Amino acid sequence: MKKLFLYFLLLCLTVLVLAGAAAGGAWYWMNRAIALPADKVEFIVTPGSTPRAMARAMNEAGIPIWEDGFAWMARLSERDKLIKAGGYEARRGDSPWTLLDRLARGEMVQRQVTLLEGWTYQQMREALRTNPDVKQTLGDISDEALMEKLGSSIKAPEGMFFPDTYVFTPGTTDFDLLRRAYQQGQQVLNTIWAQRQDDLPLKTPYEALILASIIEKETGHGPDRNRVSGVFVNRLRIGMMLQTDPTVIYGMGERYQGRIRRADLQADTPWNTYTRAGLPPTPIAASGRAALLAAVQPERHKYLYFVSRGNGTSEFSANLSEHNRNVARYILGRTQ
Image (cartoon, rainbow, N blue to C red; front, top):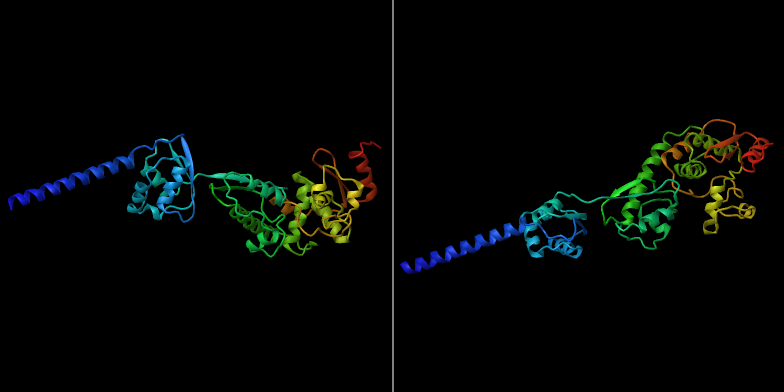
């Protein structure tokens, strides 16, 4: 019996020693710096990833980490329940525990993409398409299908995405970014529409968006925006053609090569405001806040014409004879 007790005691001691060694080894592994190939290595945690899948993604990115050990560490500490999908980075000197803790605290790396005022929808799509940190999911989706996916009653995407700088984590999808830009655009448009003048010849926020896009393309000079808006509003009130070149250019599409000929002004398209009265059917570009405000708060005046002075500002006139003199001076270079 005494010998049996000694065997049992020896077994217990062996188990304790092995358990201690295992615990010590685990502690050492958890807190030992990972041998990274660079000062920072980024990786992406995709939605629905298990701890083992996260560790696999790290290894594929060049972060050598024991997948089984990371999975057990994440589950036993219950930090796996806190980790969200997104872009993360491992830094030189990080241990597996430090890295897990960073994931659990949601310290994602961030990127940004800027969608500029005056850009077309296609230019915005191209900016997202060529950004290496944006996950491509839309492919060749049709305009109508995209707008339906966004829950919009408008079928054309042009002008519907607010130009701004959007911060995101690597792996964010192109649709998620467009949805943010669409939602922000709707919020800004509705807020500004509520500030409109009472007697505008604009029936809907969408018509204000169309006019704002024309103003956006016609002038980048802040003090001129409301005055340019006033010219177009005056024309709309009296049923006069808007006759604005940016709409012609938009309607030409790829045929536009940097100049407009007389034949282009006469070639009818839905956006040619030389051949069709009223506003074009859609915006022609993305509008910023200033252009939107100008569209709903035009300057009250009698001007019906304006021409570029060549320095970013415009010269305004109330009748055709004055306008012709301004064209001769600023466009044709005649002094008399």
